Length: 284
Length: 284
Image (cartoon, rainbow over all chains, first blue to last red; front, side, top):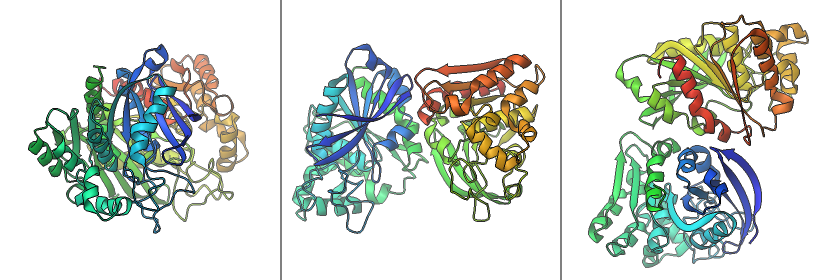
C-alpha cells in the first residue's frame, strides 16, 4: 500500500498533510488528511482520532474549519479525516446530481445494491483499510477513537457500535441518529441497501445502541445545537436517547442553546470532544 | 446608513454575523462579517480588531479558518472582517480576469487612475466608513486595532501608519512589506495609482515606517513563515526591518521555521496576535 503525499503544511508545531492512495476496498483513488501533532516526531506511537465529515464534504472541511489542531497538538492526538464517499470517474453518482446521495454522501456503510455495491463500501474503508494504512505509515498506535458531524456523526456511531473494542471512545456533532426514520437516511438506505428495511437496522445507530449489551458501549458524547435546521426532521437525537435508556447505556447528550448545524458550532465545542477522546486514549 | 443582516451563527457563546450595506465610499453594495463576543450582550462597549484579508479572499476566509473566535470570546474583542475589494457588476474588474488585481485585490488604497478611481477606495472604506458603521450599530467603542494577511497585512500596516492615533496596535501575517518593489505591488500600484512612483510611496509600509517619527508607531508585531513561497519575491520583511531600524521603531518580527503562507500558519499564531491587540486595547 503506497501513499502519495499531495500537500504538507506546518500547523501548531505539527504537520497537516494530505495523501492520495489506491483503495482496494473502494476500487478508486482516495484522498485523506492527517494531522500529526509535534509529539509525532519524538518516536513514541500516538493514538488516532478518526473524523467523519458530513454531506458534501471532503477531507478538508474539518481540518480547515474546526480549529481542532491547537488542542490536538497539546494532547498529542493524531487526527485522520477521510473523504465522505468513493470518488472518480468510474464511481457512479446520483443520476440527478443530488447532494445528499452518491458522491460526497457515502453514509459510511457497505452498499449491497447495484450500481452502488462495487464502490460504496465506506464502512470497511474507514474501519479496516484506512487504519491499517495509517498505522503502517505514521507513528500511530492501534488506539483509536472516532467522531464526526451529521452524516459523519451517524458514521462515527455506527462504526463504533458495529465494531466493539475497536474504538476507545466515540462522539458526534449533530448526528443523524435514526437514519431509518428520516428523509436523508431513507433515501440513502433504500438505494444503497434495497427496500428491505430489516437490512437497514444494521446501519442505524439508535437500533444498534438499543441492541448493545450494557457495559459494552464506549464512552459516548453527543453535541447538538437547538437552532439546527435539521434537528427535528433529520437528526432526531431523542431516538438515540431512548435507545440508551432502554439498553442501560450512559449517553451524554448536550443540547446547546442557539447553535446551528455549522462548523462554528463544531469549533465552539471541539475542545471538549478532544478531551473526551484523549481521556479514553490515555492522553489526559 | 442601514445594515441588512444576511446570516447569524452562534460561536463560542457569541455571534458570527454577516451584513450587506450600501457603501457611499465605494459606490457599491458591500458585505462584511463581525464577530461579537459574549460580552457584547452585557452592555459595555468593546474594542474592535479589524482584520484585512489577502488576495482572492472575502469576509469569510478569516472567520472560518483562523480559529480566532475562541480567544476573542475570552478577551472580549469584537472582530470585523471586510471584503478585499469593491464588488458588483458596476465595479470594473481586471480585463484578463487576473486574481492579483481588481476584484478581490483592492490593495486597501484609494485609486487615482481611471477606470479604478471611482470604486477602488478601500483605504477610506476601511479607515472611515466601516468603523463609523460598526460603532453606530454594534456595542463597539472607538478603540481600534488592525491586522491582516499578505495583501491585508500590507493594508493593516498602511492604514495604521497613515492614520496616527487611529489604531492602538497593529500586526500582520506575511505582509507585503514593500509593495513598490515586488511584482504584486508594482502591478497594482501602476494601475491604481499611475506610473509616477513618487505617488506609490504614500502606500508602501516600509517607506511610511521609515518616515514615521520615533515613538509615533503603534505596537507592531509581524509573523512570517520561512517556508512561505512568496517570502523572497513578494513579501520582503527585511525592508520593513530596515525601515524600523532607520527610524528607531521597535518592530517584533518573528520568522517561524517551517510555516507557509496559509491559514494553518495564521491559526497557529493568531492567539499571540489577539493578545498583542488585547494588551493595547486594555483587555488584558
